[in-house]
Image (cartoon, rainbow, N blue to C red; front, side, top):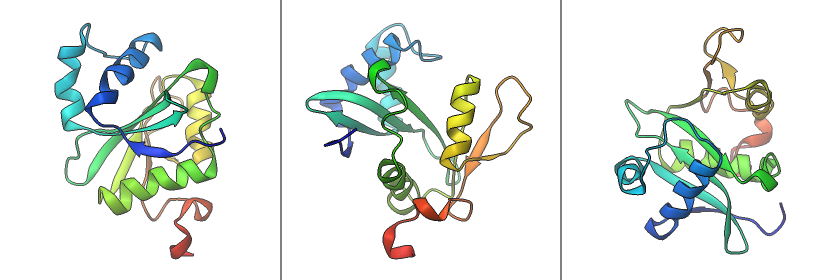
Length: 152
């Protein structure tokens, strides 16, 4: 996706992120926006805007001992298109340098998402043949191609 930049999502973007989560049948989404607000308040939210439209949302959950889950919600017409090396590099810079996380983990809900997470550089933290495997990334396991330029 050209002309897109990862940015922090302020409260003004939260309703759009919530609508996107509902539209994409994201798991465990509350039935009303006001019930989702506490979740948003505890998380670190970023987005990729295409023009004025939220093309993808990125959620780093509330950190516990430096570990947080990472979720991606994207519009159907931008699915997979956001996952460029530059966007991934910026997301992991945010996770490990800005948010000071030690580890981020994902739990892909289908084979396509599992493949994408493995391609992005996440490593298995559980067996891959379970219903919802867990994959993780740390600064040490992050692929070299995704490390900030100054780290090279």
